[in-house]
Amino acid sequence: SNSNSNNNNNKKKTNGHRKKPKPSGHNARHDHGNGNGHGNGNGNHTTSGFGNGNNTENDTEHHANLGTFRGAFLPSLQSILGVILFLRLTHITSQAGCICTTALLLASTASTLLTWSSLSAIVTNGSIQSGGPYYVISRTLGADVGASLGLLYYSGSILSGSMFVLGVVEAVHCSIRAYYARWGYGFSGHLFWYDSQILSLAIVAATTTCVHFGNRFVVVFSHLFLMVTVLSIVCVLAGAVAFALGIYDGNLQPYDRSPMENLWPRFEPDPFTGVTPDVFSSLALVYPSVTGILNGMSQSHRLKHPSQSIPRGTFWSIVASTGIYLAVCWVVGTTVSNRTLKVDKFVAASLAYPHELIVRAGVVVSALGLVLGCMSTAPNLLSAMADDELLPCLNRLKENR
Image (cartoon, rainbow, N blue to C red; front, side, top):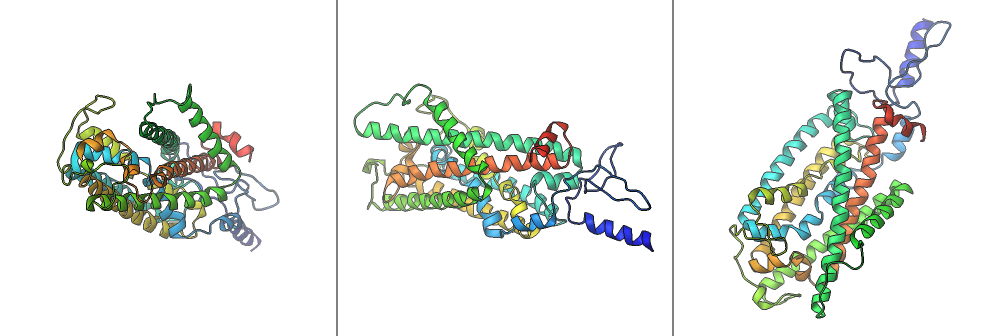
């Protein structure tokens, strides 16, 4: 009877700890998720396993307080509504046309929905802790596959953050170029020597500082940035409708108004680069704009009910973002002339109502929010992998916490 009571107590002690990855290979270790295990009889024995023994259930419950809307829908929607919507979609529409651009968007969305369905099937079959995609994959396909894909997703998050930082720099340069041209001055494209590099490093340092002082600041700023992004989109759509009706010109001229000129593809050399795009290069620009659905899963450790919130929030973020992309494509594409869309890559700001500064600032703020998301997601992946002790090079991260 004493032996049975000790076994029951040991099971209770390990319930609150991180679940180990699924073993794979011939040398799989049959360890407990808790770092320390007590034996029966007169002595004690210890086993080393996956997970950190200090991660208790109370700590998880303390941080897991977000619902579907704030924890899954908003992060996924924010990662999809990025700089490509403002700086590249109108240019793609001028080259590929509204009909072809719509087909590219729907094809990209279909691919995203396949990913969503697969992840939803996995997510609803068990509990999810910190680590997001890595945790789900490592507990279903094995630790080796989870570590490999986790490193790839980590690299992708870092590279996406770099792209968003460059989006901020390009938005600033486009705005300065527009004001210089309006005042009658030429603009060489640079404010000072290495201005793009210095501004990019300053943005990375600022976002890193924000993430370092606490994830609560990231959540607050991310929601604020998303509100500015949505306001910018509303201003663009309102300005385009008013421009089509002839009651508002923004920073365009009446001869820039040309209804139904961009319905079909008109691939021509780019005015700035001289390169003639095609369908595949247009798809390469469109596809990254709809691949941000994993950002909601990366917030799994903050969700009250991850198995319910992630599938619902991710699905509705895909539907909402696709509708927004199609609306901007058709409203702007059927209103502004083809030549204007090709020359003015920031035509979204030129159309904005009531003022262009709302959209110019909104693009910068939107990109900063995306950078914050990447900077907060990538460390969580490494932290989860360090807890599972899969890669010896990450053990130092576990020791320093």
